[in-house]
Amino acid sequence: MSAVLRLGQGGLIQSAPRWGSHVAALLALWLGALSSSAAEPADTRAAFLKLLDRPRVELAPEVKPPAGTNGLRTVHFSFAAEAGVRVPGLLIHRGEAQGRRPVVIVLHGTGANKESQLSLLTDLAKRGFLAVAIDGRHHGARTKAGRGSAEYHEAILNAWFGSKKLPFLYDTAWDVMRLVDYLGTRDDVDAARIGLIGFSKGGMEGYLAAAADPRIAVVVPCIGVQSFKWALDNESWRSRVETFKPALDAAAKDEGETVSAAFVRRFYDRVVPGIYGQFDGPAMLPLIAPRPLLVINGEADMRTPLPGVNECLTAARTAYRAAGAEPKLQVILQPQTGHKVTVEARQAAVDWFVKWLRP
Image (cartoon, rainbow, N blue to C red; front, side, top):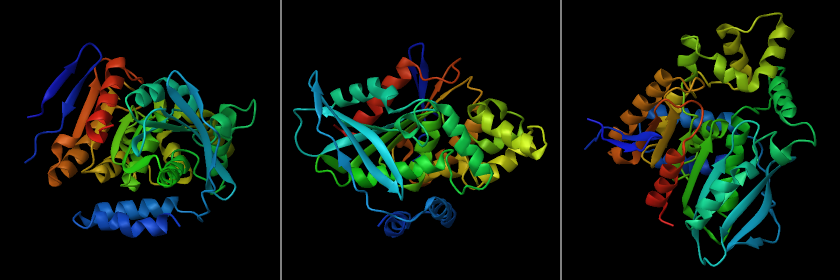
């Protein structure tokens, strides 16, 4: 039976049933780590890495002098993710700490930016972590002044028209992997203790990046885990596509079609290939095993319909059982909660990182 722990009014933690240089250079390492795994998960990871792969460039990091306040230091930095693409980020830490420390990467949701995560970054830094956030593709400092979400929707529409970019989820997952590369070059980072938490879009990008990159040691996807296939098969896709509706509507108009489940499938095939098939939640979430994984979702979240979430969790539990790592998988299903993270669940996420990364 599953153990259940109440979190006040905000949610519950449910553990799994208790069961007894870049991509080319890393592929051998990653697949080696999977030597005891079944061929199919290894093939899924390899296929996803192949989809994400692009010509490597030097990181060429640029780091500004730190600014201090209230015992914390904030560092702005950037690095090259690919040719012509730089990723801006910020890092917050306690100024008095010395030596190598664990890191928690924080990924924002649609329409937000790295600064929107300052509260969580500050809390993590006070607990002894290096807390890091980046702007996702076509968000924050990576957009032209005044463009806002329009640039993001335009990039997604351009993917439909054949730009060969992957601005919905996949490009930022690549950026996260390059961020891990950068963190590994810093003399204040313990590269064996890197965690990641993401919200909504960032939650999806987070579990995809972690599935691809075993260097991410602890993972907390928030209101992001889902089965795109289940949603399409059960007419529960409309809330999800609201986050990129301008691009979807423009693509449908260009084709002279109405937006339907069939058209959304075609749209996904061009814009985010494999997301309702080979790289859907039930296929990718198990690739995180046996690393500590805390999944946070809302029971009433229409963007991540619960039956699809349960399909992901069933697959993940099977993988954690096979790895003998069931205590490392836990789930918070926030009762009567939509697309948000409660205070209690957020605190549970911080505690999860403290438990497994030991700041």
